[in-house]
Amino acid sequence: MPIHYLVDGDLNIVFSTWSMEITAKTAASYYKQLLQDETAMNCGRSLADLRQADMKLTGAEFNEVIAKVVVPNLGSRTWRSAILVQKPDQFGVARQYDVFASGYSSNSIFYDYDEALEWLLKA
Image (cartoon, rainbow, N blue to C red):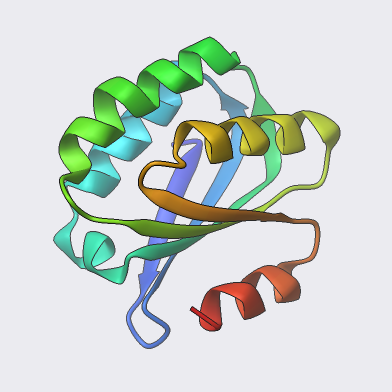
């Protein structure tokens, strides 16, 4: 699967790695799986590493995934995400996510892994 995640119980963070080609279908599948994982959802924060991803979804498609998959299944939970990027297209998608998810998530975009982790741990 192009997106996989690991729950670190000690740090209480969901670490996800996005790789290969990422489409709206890929993103929707990932979020459906994540949102059904109570252990992951109880963390309330994540570090999403997009550096190996080839982003192939449009802003409209990503907005639809958030609106139809994430929001209805998230309930009253809130989230905090550090998003790690390397390329301009990844930054663009991360910035779009930041806007689309602003109702439930506090997000920040990073180019440095240690800075991303430090930001999450301060929460």
